[in-house]
Length: 306
Image (cartoon, rainbow, N blue to C red; front, side, top):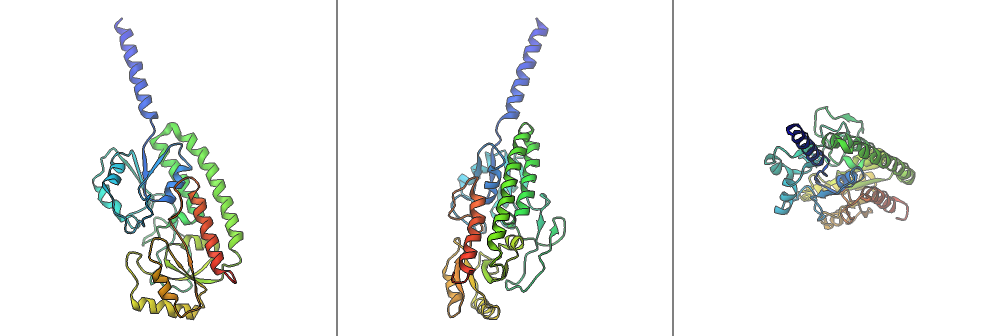
């Protein structure tokens, strides 16, 4: 009887352990594009912090956001350089919450931050993540990095939920196929306008530019959190004249009056590029809608008669 009770107790403990291990992990991430990629991998919901069309550059955490983080099993973010709001909760997190930082860990092909805002022709050479220097954190806008990021997420999430590994791998395989097909589609769409010079609001697009050999020649803002000075606006106007810039692109997260001020008394047109999916609904399709819109808006503004 004693052995039977011990056996039954062991079975009960094992069952509870299996249930605990198979329980869906609560995943929280910061911005819509990363959220979209994750939804294409996991078979569960993923909490999103920036769901109110804010920019990560000036986002402020609310108590409800802090609760999402403290209730999570896993927190996934890019880097404090683009998500400065994450520094405070990182310092106060419970040790049981797994944090996955992308930059420095995901073996991505990174590009250095371009200095000065009115860059000339600069080499777009890839840099492995262990190189020194400051790197552009807008990694979701390059298809090669999205594929690498997907594989990284599968590896890291499989460590946390090993019973889900095969599901993650199968979902990732399908997603990567879609990303590759979309990349080929965009390459065909953009080939006819890739020599046209343009200026962006802030330097967020160089991975996208590198994918499709686009001709961005500068950015209005050196820091998206700070409005450009009159001197800066004068420099950009000179750049427009010198390089026969076709289009200046605003961003929906920032005041459009800045771009309108810059293009006054020039021949440049005004367009809009959105690196985050400001007007898009969060979900699996957001990544594809985001890059489709970038291509569409570039073509509309840079094409003859656009």
